[in-house]
Length: 545
Image 1 (tube, rainbow, N blue to C red):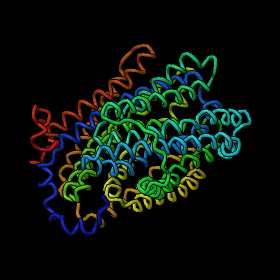
Image 2: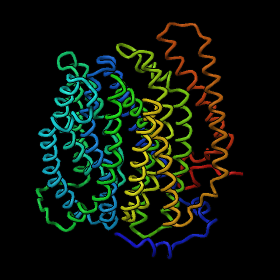
Image 3: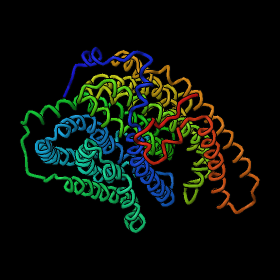
Image 4: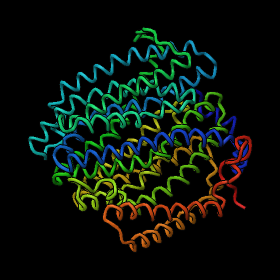
Protein backbone atom coordinates (compact mmCIF):
# COMPACT_ATOMS: atom_id res chain seq x y z
CA UNK A 1 0.00 0.00 0.00
CA UNK A 2 2.87 2.36 0.67
CA UNK A 3 3.64 4.55 -2.30
CA UNK A 4 6.38 7.00 -3.01
CA UNK A 5 5.04 10.47 -2.39
CA UNK A 6 7.41 11.88 -4.97
CA UNK A 7 5.82 9.73 -7.66
CA UNK A 8 2.36 10.70 -6.45
CA UNK A 9 3.14 14.37 -6.69
CA UNK A 10 4.68 13.99 -10.07
CA UNK A 11 1.72 12.12 -11.51
CA UNK A 12 -1.25 14.00 -10.01
CA UNK A 13 -0.17 17.58 -9.36
CA UNK A 14 -2.97 20.08 -9.91
CA UNK A 15 -2.54 23.62 -11.16
CA UNK A 16 -2.73 26.05 -8.28
CA UNK A 17 -6.17 27.39 -9.12
CA UNK A 18 -7.86 24.06 -9.71
CA UNK A 19 -8.24 22.75 -6.18
CA UNK A 20 -11.47 24.41 -5.20
CA UNK A 21 -12.98 23.89 -8.62
CA UNK A 22 -12.19 20.21 -8.39
CA UNK A 23 -13.68 20.06 -4.93
CA UNK A 24 -17.09 21.08 -6.25
CA UNK A 25 -17.58 17.56 -7.50
CA UNK A 26 -16.27 15.92 -4.32
CA UNK A 27 -18.93 14.04 -2.35
CA UNK A 28 -18.86 16.28 0.71
CA UNK A 29 -22.07 14.61 1.86
CA UNK A 30 -20.11 11.57 3.06
CA UNK A 31 -17.75 13.71 5.12
CA UNK A 32 -20.57 15.72 6.67
CA UNK A 33 -22.84 12.71 7.30
CA UNK A 34 -20.16 10.59 8.95
CA UNK A 35 -18.88 13.56 10.94
CA UNK A 36 -22.45 14.17 12.12
CA UNK A 37 -22.78 10.58 13.34
CA UNK A 38 -19.53 10.68 15.28
CA UNK A 39 -20.24 14.22 16.50
CA UNK A 40 -23.66 13.21 17.85
CA UNK A 41 -22.21 10.27 19.75
CA UNK A 42 -19.23 12.35 20.88
CA UNK A 43 -21.63 15.04 22.07
CA UNK A 44 -23.58 12.46 24.04
CA UNK A 45 -20.30 11.21 25.47
CA UNK A 46 -19.29 14.73 26.45
CA UNK A 47 -22.66 15.37 28.06
CA UNK A 48 -22.39 12.18 30.09
CA UNK A 49 -18.81 13.16 30.98
CA UNK A 50 -19.95 16.54 32.28
CA UNK A 51 -22.59 14.83 34.40
CA UNK A 52 -19.92 12.50 35.76
CA UNK A 53 -17.59 15.42 36.49
CA UNK A 54 -20.38 17.24 38.30
CA UNK A 55 -21.03 14.15 40.42
CA UNK A 56 -17.35 13.79 41.29
CA UNK A 57 -16.90 17.44 42.22
CA UNK A 58 -20.12 17.50 44.21
CA UNK A 59 -19.20 14.37 46.14
CA UNK A 60 -15.47 14.93 46.65
CA UNK A 61 -14.84 18.62 45.93
CA UNK A 62 -11.46 20.03 44.92
CA UNK A 63 -8.95 18.49 47.28
CA UNK A 64 -6.59 15.63 47.96
CA UNK A 65 -8.99 12.87 46.81
CA UNK A 66 -9.52 14.33 43.34
CA UNK A 67 -5.82 15.22 43.11
CA UNK A 68 -5.02 11.59 43.90
CA UNK A 69 -7.55 10.26 41.39
CA UNK A 70 -6.29 12.36 38.49
CA UNK A 71 -2.70 11.54 39.32
CA UNK A 72 -3.53 7.80 39.37
CA UNK A 73 -5.32 8.20 36.04
CA UNK A 74 -2.42 9.97 34.32
CA UNK A 75 -0.21 7.02 33.35
CA UNK A 76 -3.04 4.63 32.42
CA UNK A 77 -4.55 7.34 30.21
CA UNK A 78 -1.17 8.15 28.71
CA UNK A 79 -0.62 4.52 27.75
CA UNK A 80 -4.19 3.89 26.58
CA UNK A 81 -4.16 7.04 24.47
CA UNK A 82 -1.09 5.70 22.67
CA UNK A 83 -3.22 2.82 21.39
CA UNK A 84 -6.53 4.67 21.00
CA UNK A 85 -5.04 7.64 19.15
CA UNK A 86 -1.99 6.21 17.43
CA UNK A 87 -3.31 2.69 16.78
CA UNK A 88 -5.87 3.74 14.15
CA UNK A 89 -3.20 5.75 12.32
CA UNK A 90 -1.30 2.51 11.69
CA UNK A 91 -4.18 0.04 11.40
CA UNK A 92 -6.73 1.96 9.31
CA UNK A 93 -4.52 2.12 6.17
CA UNK A 94 -3.64 -1.56 6.56
CA UNK A 95 -7.24 -2.79 6.83
CA UNK A 96 -8.48 -0.26 4.26
CA UNK A 97 -6.18 -1.87 1.70
CA UNK A 98 -7.59 -5.35 2.46
CA UNK A 99 -11.21 -4.16 2.30
CA UNK A 100 -10.61 -2.22 -0.93
CA UNK A 101 -9.49 -5.54 -2.47
CA UNK A 102 -12.42 -7.39 -0.83
CA UNK A 103 -9.87 -9.61 0.88
CA UNK A 104 -11.92 -10.08 4.04
CA UNK A 105 -10.48 -13.49 4.91
CA UNK A 106 -6.96 -12.06 5.29
CA UNK A 107 -8.31 -9.05 7.19
CA UNK A 108 -10.18 -11.22 9.69
CA UNK A 109 -7.18 -13.47 10.22
CA UNK A 110 -4.96 -10.45 10.88
CA UNK A 111 -7.55 -9.07 13.29
CA UNK A 112 -7.64 -12.37 15.22
CA UNK A 113 -3.85 -12.33 15.40
CA UNK A 114 -3.82 -8.73 16.65
CA UNK A 115 -6.47 -9.45 19.29
CA UNK A 116 -4.64 -12.52 20.61
CA UNK A 117 -1.21 -10.94 20.69
CA UNK A 118 -2.61 -7.66 21.96
CA UNK A 119 -4.32 -9.36 24.89
CA UNK A 120 -1.03 -10.74 26.21
CA UNK A 121 0.81 -7.47 25.61
CA UNK A 122 -1.83 -5.28 27.25
CA UNK A 123 -2.32 -7.63 30.20
CA UNK A 124 1.44 -7.69 30.73
CA UNK A 125 1.56 -3.90 30.81
CA UNK A 126 -1.29 -3.86 33.33
CA UNK A 127 0.50 -6.26 35.66
CA UNK A 128 3.76 -4.34 35.35
CA UNK A 129 1.96 -1.07 36.11
CA UNK A 130 0.35 -2.54 39.22
CA UNK A 131 3.69 -3.83 40.46
CA UNK A 132 5.49 -0.53 39.86
CA UNK A 133 2.73 1.88 40.89
CA UNK A 134 4.27 2.35 44.33
CA UNK A 135 7.33 3.82 42.62
CA UNK A 136 6.07 5.61 39.51
CA UNK A 137 3.03 7.36 41.03
CA UNK A 138 4.64 9.17 44.01
CA UNK A 139 7.33 10.83 41.86
CA UNK A 140 4.60 12.69 39.95
CA UNK A 141 3.23 14.44 43.06
CA UNK A 142 6.17 15.16 45.34
CA UNK A 143 4.43 18.28 46.61
CA UNK A 144 1.27 16.54 47.92
CA UNK A 145 0.67 15.15 51.39
CA UNK A 146 1.23 11.48 52.25
CA UNK A 147 -2.50 10.62 52.35
CA UNK A 148 -2.96 11.81 48.74
CA UNK A 149 0.09 9.86 47.57
CA UNK A 150 -1.10 6.66 49.27
CA UNK A 151 -4.59 7.00 47.79
CA UNK A 152 -3.17 7.67 44.32
CA UNK A 153 -1.14 4.46 44.47
CA UNK A 154 -4.21 2.42 45.47
CA UNK A 155 -6.34 3.89 42.69
CA UNK A 156 -3.65 3.36 40.05
CA UNK A 157 -3.65 -0.40 40.69
CA UNK A 158 -7.28 -0.51 39.55
CA UNK A 159 -7.00 2.05 36.77
CA UNK A 160 -4.05 0.31 35.09
CA UNK A 161 -6.52 -2.33 33.84
CA UNK A 162 -8.01 0.34 31.59
CA UNK A 163 -5.02 -0.38 29.35
CA UNK A 164 -6.34 -3.84 28.54
CA UNK A 165 -9.83 -2.50 27.76
CA UNK A 166 -8.71 0.44 25.65
CA UNK A 167 -5.97 -1.49 23.90
CA UNK A 168 -8.39 -4.11 22.59
CA UNK A 169 -10.99 -1.41 21.86
CA UNK A 170 -8.53 0.55 19.69
CA UNK A 171 -7.92 -2.50 17.48
CA UNK A 172 -11.64 -3.14 16.97
CA UNK A 173 -12.33 0.56 16.45
CA UNK A 174 -9.67 0.81 13.73
CA UNK A 175 -11.27 -2.00 11.75
CA UNK A 176 -14.72 -0.41 12.03
CA UNK A 177 -13.28 2.90 10.86
CA UNK A 178 -11.59 1.16 7.92
CA UNK A 179 -15.03 -0.10 6.91
CA UNK A 180 -16.35 3.45 7.44
CA UNK A 181 -18.72 2.26 10.17
CA UNK A 182 -18.92 4.93 12.84
CA UNK A 183 -21.95 4.18 15.01
CA UNK A 184 -20.53 1.67 17.50
CA UNK A 185 -16.90 2.75 17.07
CA UNK A 186 -17.76 6.28 18.28
CA UNK A 187 -19.86 5.27 21.28
CA UNK A 188 -16.99 4.57 23.69
CA UNK A 189 -17.23 7.67 25.89
CA UNK A 190 -21.01 7.43 26.13
CA UNK A 191 -20.93 3.78 27.18
CA UNK A 192 -18.04 4.21 29.62
CA UNK A 193 -19.31 7.41 31.24
CA UNK A 194 -22.87 6.11 31.57
CA UNK A 195 -21.79 2.99 33.43
CA UNK A 196 -19.38 5.01 35.59
CA UNK A 197 -22.19 7.38 36.55
CA UNK A 198 -24.34 4.44 37.64
CA UNK A 199 -21.54 2.98 39.76
CA UNK A 200 -20.70 6.36 41.34
CA UNK A 201 -24.34 7.16 42.17
CA UNK A 202 -24.90 3.84 43.92
CA UNK A 203 -21.43 3.19 45.28
CA UNK A 204 -19.57 6.37 46.25
CA UNK A 205 -20.90 6.38 49.82
CA UNK A 206 -19.48 2.89 50.35
CA UNK A 207 -16.35 2.91 48.20
CA UNK A 208 -15.48 6.61 48.05
CA UNK A 209 -13.40 7.77 45.10
CA UNK A 210 -12.67 4.11 44.28
CA UNK A 211 -16.18 3.87 42.81
CA UNK A 212 -15.10 6.12 39.94
CA UNK A 213 -12.21 3.83 39.06
CA UNK A 214 -14.38 0.70 39.18
CA UNK A 215 -17.04 2.31 37.01
CA UNK A 216 -14.52 3.35 34.36
CA UNK A 217 -13.13 -0.16 34.23
CA UNK A 218 -16.57 -1.75 33.86
CA UNK A 219 -17.49 0.71 31.11
CA UNK A 220 -14.30 -0.09 29.22
CA UNK A 221 -15.03 -3.82 29.12
CA UNK A 222 -18.62 -3.23 27.97
CA UNK A 223 -17.38 -0.98 25.13
CA UNK A 224 -15.08 -3.76 23.89
CA UNK A 225 -18.01 -6.17 23.90
CA UNK A 226 -20.20 -3.73 21.95
CA UNK A 227 -17.64 -3.23 19.16
CA UNK A 228 -16.82 -6.92 18.97
CA UNK A 229 -20.53 -7.65 18.51
CA UNK A 230 -20.69 -5.08 15.69
CA UNK A 231 -17.82 -6.80 13.86
CA UNK A 232 -19.32 -10.26 14.41
CA UNK A 233 -22.47 -8.98 12.72
CA UNK A 234 -20.39 -8.11 9.64
CA UNK A 235 -18.65 -11.43 9.23
CA UNK A 236 -15.78 -11.46 11.73
CA UNK A 237 -15.30 -14.66 13.70
CA UNK A 238 -12.51 -14.68 16.24
CA UNK A 239 -10.05 -17.57 15.99
CA UNK A 240 -7.07 -18.25 18.18
CA UNK A 241 -4.10 -17.04 16.13
CA UNK A 242 -0.90 -16.51 18.08
CA UNK A 243 1.96 -15.95 15.65
CA UNK A 244 4.24 -13.21 17.00
CA UNK A 245 6.70 -13.86 14.16
CA UNK A 246 4.13 -13.23 11.41
CA UNK A 247 5.74 -10.75 8.95
CA UNK A 248 2.62 -8.56 8.67
CA UNK A 249 2.25 -8.41 12.42
CA UNK A 250 5.91 -7.52 12.82
CA UNK A 251 5.56 -4.75 10.22
CA UNK A 252 2.65 -3.28 12.18
CA UNK A 253 4.57 -3.44 15.46
CA UNK A 254 7.62 -1.87 13.82
CA UNK A 255 5.47 0.94 12.42
CA UNK A 256 4.53 1.91 15.96
CA UNK A 257 8.02 3.14 16.82
CA UNK A 258 7.46 6.73 15.66
CA UNK A 259 3.84 7.10 16.86
CA UNK A 260 4.66 5.43 20.18
CA UNK A 261 7.69 7.60 20.88
CA UNK A 262 5.95 10.72 19.68
CA UNK A 263 2.84 10.13 21.72
CA UNK A 264 4.77 9.42 24.89
CA UNK A 265 6.61 12.70 24.37
CA UNK A 266 3.37 14.55 23.73
CA UNK A 267 1.57 13.11 26.73
CA UNK A 268 4.58 13.81 28.93
CA UNK A 269 3.09 17.29 29.17
CA UNK A 270 0.42 15.88 31.48
CA UNK A 271 3.08 14.50 33.81
CA UNK A 272 4.80 17.89 33.70
CA UNK A 273 1.51 19.55 34.69
CA UNK A 274 1.16 17.10 37.59
CA UNK A 275 4.68 17.89 38.79
CA UNK A 276 4.44 21.67 38.48
CA UNK A 277 0.84 21.77 39.74
CA UNK A 278 1.73 19.84 42.89
CA UNK A 279 3.80 22.85 44.05
CA UNK A 280 1.01 25.40 43.42
CA UNK A 281 -1.25 24.47 46.34
CA UNK A 282 -3.94 21.87 47.02
CA UNK A 283 -6.58 21.78 44.30
CA UNK A 284 -4.50 23.53 41.61
CA UNK A 285 -3.86 20.26 39.84
CA UNK A 286 -7.57 19.39 39.82
CA UNK A 287 -8.57 22.82 38.47
CA UNK A 288 -6.08 22.60 35.60
CA UNK A 289 -7.15 19.06 34.80
CA UNK A 290 -10.85 19.92 34.73
CA UNK A 291 -10.21 22.94 32.53
CA UNK A 292 -8.27 20.71 30.17
CA UNK A 293 -11.08 18.13 30.16
CA UNK A 294 -13.63 20.78 29.25
CA UNK A 295 -11.49 22.11 26.40
CA UNK A 296 -10.75 18.66 25.01
CA UNK A 297 -14.38 17.62 25.38
CA UNK A 298 -15.53 20.59 23.33
CA UNK A 299 -12.86 19.86 20.75
CA UNK A 300 -13.97 16.26 20.49
CA UNK A 301 -17.67 16.90 19.92
CA UNK A 302 -17.36 18.08 16.31
CA UNK A 303 -13.72 18.79 15.53
CA UNK A 304 -12.46 15.40 16.63
CA UNK A 305 -15.23 13.83 14.59
CA UNK A 306 -14.04 15.62 11.45
CA UNK A 307 -10.53 14.23 11.95
CA UNK A 308 -11.91 10.73 12.57
CA UNK A 309 -13.85 10.57 9.32
CA UNK A 310 -11.17 12.37 7.27
CA UNK A 311 -8.49 9.75 7.88
CA UNK A 312 -10.39 6.75 6.45
CA UNK A 313 -11.34 8.83 3.38
CA UNK A 314 -7.77 9.98 2.84
CA UNK A 315 -6.49 6.42 3.36
CA UNK A 316 -8.95 5.15 0.76
CA UNK A 317 -7.63 7.66 -1.80
CA UNK A 318 -4.02 6.92 -0.82
CA UNK A 319 -4.62 3.22 -1.51
CA UNK A 320 -5.35 4.15 -5.14
CA UNK A 321 -2.57 6.78 -5.39
CA UNK A 322 -5.12 9.56 -5.92
CA UNK A 323 -3.35 12.60 -4.50
CA UNK A 324 -5.90 14.94 -6.07
CA UNK A 325 -8.70 13.44 -3.98
CA UNK A 326 -6.50 13.44 -0.87
CA UNK A 327 -5.90 17.17 -1.15
CA UNK A 328 -9.56 17.90 -1.83
CA UNK A 329 -10.59 15.91 1.23
CA UNK A 330 -8.03 17.72 3.37
CA UNK A 331 -9.09 21.18 2.21
CA UNK A 332 -12.77 20.50 2.82
CA UNK A 333 -11.93 19.07 6.24
CA UNK A 334 -9.98 22.19 7.18
CA UNK A 335 -12.91 24.34 6.05
CA UNK A 336 -15.30 22.34 8.21
CA UNK A 337 -12.85 22.47 11.13
CA UNK A 338 -12.55 26.23 10.79
CA UNK A 339 -16.30 26.76 10.53
CA UNK A 340 -17.01 24.78 13.69
CA UNK A 341 -13.76 25.38 15.56
CA UNK A 342 -13.57 29.17 15.44
CA UNK A 343 -17.20 29.55 16.53
CA UNK A 344 -16.72 27.03 19.36
CA UNK A 345 -13.55 28.80 20.53
CA UNK A 346 -15.22 32.21 20.73
CA UNK A 347 -18.29 30.75 22.41
CA UNK A 348 -16.21 28.86 25.00
CA UNK A 349 -14.16 31.94 25.88
CA UNK A 350 -17.36 33.91 26.49
CA UNK A 351 -19.43 31.13 28.06
CA UNK A 352 -16.80 29.34 30.17
CA UNK A 353 -17.62 30.97 33.50
CA UNK A 354 -21.45 30.70 33.41
CA UNK A 355 -21.15 27.12 32.09
CA UNK A 356 -18.77 26.05 34.87
CA UNK A 357 -20.90 27.79 37.51
CA UNK A 358 -23.99 26.00 36.19
CA UNK A 359 -22.37 22.58 36.01
CA UNK A 360 -20.02 22.45 38.97
CA UNK A 361 -20.68 25.21 41.55
CA UNK A 362 -22.27 23.15 44.28
CA UNK A 363 -21.14 21.11 47.26
CA UNK A 364 -17.40 21.49 47.77
CA UNK A 365 -16.81 23.34 44.47
CA UNK A 366 -16.83 27.09 45.23
CA UNK A 367 -17.41 30.20 43.10
CA UNK A 368 -13.69 31.00 43.37
CA UNK A 369 -12.89 27.57 41.93
CA UNK A 370 -15.33 28.25 39.07
CA UNK A 371 -13.76 31.64 38.32
CA UNK A 372 -10.23 30.23 38.21
CA UNK A 373 -11.26 27.26 36.10
CA UNK A 374 -13.01 29.52 33.56
CA UNK A 375 -9.89 31.69 33.17
CA UNK A 376 -7.76 28.60 32.53
CA UNK A 377 -10.32 27.32 30.01
CA UNK A 378 -10.19 30.63 28.12
CA UNK A 379 -6.39 30.62 27.96
CA UNK A 380 -6.36 27.01 26.75
CA UNK A 381 -9.08 27.49 24.11
CA UNK A 382 -6.80 28.18 21.09
CA UNK A 383 -5.60 24.59 21.36
CA UNK A 384 -9.10 23.42 20.32
CA UNK A 385 -8.72 24.60 16.74
CA UNK A 386 -4.93 24.52 16.40
CA UNK A 387 -4.62 20.98 17.75
CA UNK A 388 -7.27 19.63 15.38
CA UNK A 389 -5.68 21.37 12.38
CA UNK A 390 -2.44 19.59 13.26
CA UNK A 391 -4.29 16.27 13.52
CA UNK A 392 -6.06 16.62 10.18
CA UNK A 393 -2.90 17.64 8.33
CA UNK A 394 -1.16 14.60 9.78
CA UNK A 395 -3.70 12.30 8.09
CA UNK A 396 -2.03 12.77 4.70
CA UNK A 397 1.33 11.72 6.11
CA UNK A 398 -0.05 8.69 7.94
CA UNK A 399 -2.10 7.60 4.93
CA UNK A 400 1.05 7.66 2.78
CA UNK A 401 3.06 5.81 5.44
CA UNK A 402 5.18 8.80 6.42
CA UNK A 403 5.41 8.42 10.19
CA UNK A 404 8.47 10.57 10.76
CA UNK A 405 6.89 13.97 10.02
CA UNK A 406 4.06 13.61 12.61
CA UNK A 407 6.71 12.43 15.09
CA UNK A 408 8.77 15.56 14.48
CA UNK A 409 5.70 17.76 15.01
CA UNK A 410 5.05 16.06 18.35
CA UNK A 411 8.68 16.55 19.33
CA UNK A 412 8.41 20.25 18.51
CA UNK A 413 5.26 20.54 20.62
CA UNK A 414 6.84 18.68 23.55
CA UNK A 415 10.02 20.72 23.64
CA UNK A 416 8.26 24.07 23.27
CA UNK A 417 5.58 23.12 25.83
CA UNK A 418 8.15 21.99 28.39
CA UNK A 419 10.27 25.11 28.09
CA UNK A 420 7.28 27.46 28.07
CA UNK A 421 5.56 25.72 31.01
CA UNK A 422 8.62 25.90 33.25
CA UNK A 423 9.24 29.56 32.41
CA UNK A 424 5.63 30.73 32.53
CA UNK A 425 4.69 28.89 35.75
CA UNK A 426 7.58 30.66 37.43
CA UNK A 427 6.26 34.01 36.17
CA UNK A 428 2.47 33.56 36.24
CA UNK A 429 1.79 30.63 38.55
CA UNK A 430 -0.98 28.23 37.54
CA UNK A 431 -2.00 30.46 34.58
CA UNK A 432 1.32 29.68 32.94
CA UNK A 433 0.23 26.09 32.25
CA UNK A 434 -2.65 26.85 29.82
CA UNK A 435 -0.71 29.63 28.10
CA UNK A 436 2.16 27.22 27.48
CA UNK A 437 -0.26 24.71 25.86
CA UNK A 438 -1.68 27.30 23.46
CA UNK A 439 1.71 28.69 22.42
CA UNK A 440 3.11 25.20 21.88
CA UNK A 441 0.09 24.32 19.70
CA UNK A 442 0.74 27.42 17.59
CA UNK A 443 4.33 26.40 16.93
CA UNK A 444 3.23 22.87 16.06
CA UNK A 445 0.58 24.10 13.62
CA UNK A 446 3.09 26.33 11.83
CA UNK A 447 5.46 23.41 11.36
CA UNK A 448 2.81 21.02 10.02
CA UNK A 449 1.41 23.48 7.50
CA UNK A 450 4.87 24.20 6.14
CA UNK A 451 5.63 20.47 5.83
CA UNK A 452 2.27 19.87 4.15
CA UNK A 453 3.05 22.44 1.48
CA UNK A 454 6.56 21.14 0.79
CA UNK A 455 5.52 17.48 0.71
CA UNK A 456 2.19 17.46 -1.13
CA UNK A 457 2.34 20.66 -3.14
CA UNK A 458 -0.09 23.62 -3.14
CA UNK A 459 -3.27 22.77 -1.29
CA UNK A 460 -5.24 25.81 -2.45
CA UNK A 461 -5.09 28.10 0.57
CA UNK A 462 -5.59 31.23 -1.56
CA UNK A 463 -9.03 29.98 -2.53
CA UNK A 464 -10.12 30.11 1.12
CA UNK A 465 -9.65 33.85 1.69
CA UNK A 466 -13.27 34.65 0.84
CA UNK A 467 -14.50 31.84 3.09
CA UNK A 468 -12.21 33.01 5.93
CA UNK A 469 -13.44 36.61 5.71
CA UNK A 470 -17.10 35.54 5.79
CA UNK A 471 -16.39 33.19 8.71
CA UNK A 472 -14.70 35.89 10.79
CA UNK A 473 -17.61 38.23 10.10
CA UNK A 474 -20.17 35.61 11.17
CA UNK A 475 -18.27 34.79 14.36
CA UNK A 476 -17.98 38.48 15.22
CA UNK A 477 -21.74 38.89 14.82
CA UNK A 478 -22.25 35.81 17.02
CA UNK A 479 -20.03 37.39 19.69
CA UNK A 480 -22.14 40.55 19.62
CA UNK A 481 -25.27 38.43 19.96
CA UNK A 482 -23.78 36.60 22.95
CA UNK A 483 -22.89 39.89 24.63
CA UNK A 484 -26.41 41.25 24.16
CA UNK A 485 -27.82 38.01 25.57
CA UNK A 486 -25.54 38.27 28.61
CA UNK A 487 -26.79 41.79 29.33
CA UNK A 488 -30.39 40.65 29.01
CA UNK A 489 -29.77 37.76 31.43
CA UNK A 490 -28.53 40.18 34.12
CA UNK A 491 -31.85 42.06 33.97
CA UNK A 492 -33.89 39.05 35.11
CA UNK A 493 -34.95 38.67 38.74
CA UNK A 494 -35.19 34.98 39.59
CA UNK A 495 -33.85 32.49 42.12
CA UNK A 496 -30.10 31.83 42.19
CA UNK A 497 -30.44 28.32 40.75
CA UNK A 498 -32.52 29.55 37.82
CA UNK A 499 -30.24 32.56 37.37
CA UNK A 500 -27.26 30.23 36.87
CA UNK A 501 -29.13 28.49 34.08
CA UNK A 502 -30.27 31.73 32.42
CA UNK A 503 -26.79 33.28 32.62
CA UNK A 504 -25.58 30.42 30.44
CA UNK A 505 -28.62 29.64 28.28
CA UNK A 506 -29.74 33.12 27.17
CA UNK A 507 -26.35 34.36 25.88
CA UNK A 508 -25.69 31.00 24.23
CA UNK A 509 -29.07 31.07 22.48
CA UNK A 510 -28.56 34.66 21.29
CA UNK A 511 -25.06 33.87 20.05
CA UNK A 512 -26.18 30.70 18.27
CA UNK A 513 -29.09 32.43 16.54
CA UNK A 514 -26.83 35.31 15.49
CA UNK A 515 -24.25 32.91 14.07
CA UNK A 516 -26.79 30.83 12.14
CA UNK A 517 -28.38 33.96 10.70
CA UNK A 518 -25.01 35.45 9.71
CA UNK A 519 -23.78 32.15 8.26
CA UNK A 520 -26.91 31.89 6.12
CA UNK A 521 -26.79 35.49 4.89
CA UNK A 522 -23.06 35.26 4.15
CA UNK A 523 -23.51 31.89 2.38
CA UNK A 524 -21.01 30.12 4.62
CA UNK A 525 -23.13 26.99 4.17
CA UNK A 526 -25.10 26.17 1.06
CA UNK A 527 -28.66 25.60 2.26
CA UNK A 528 -29.38 23.33 -0.71
CA UNK A 529 -26.99 20.81 0.83
CA UNK A 530 -29.67 19.82 3.37
CA UNK A 531 -32.32 19.17 0.72
CA UNK A 532 -33.14 15.57 -0.35
CA UNK A 533 -30.61 14.23 -2.82
CA UNK A 534 -28.00 16.81 -1.78
CA UNK A 535 -25.34 14.08 -1.61
CA UNK A 536 -25.43 13.97 -5.39
CA UNK A 537 -25.06 17.69 -5.87
CA UNK A 538 -22.68 20.47 -4.87
CA UNK A 539 -20.39 20.79 -1.86
CA UNK A 540 -21.36 21.46 1.72
CA UNK A 541 -19.84 24.95 1.80
CA UNK A 542 -21.55 27.83 0.04
CA UNK A 543 -19.59 29.47 -2.74
CA UNK A 544 -18.77 33.13 -2.61
CA UNK A 545 -20.66 35.33 -5.00
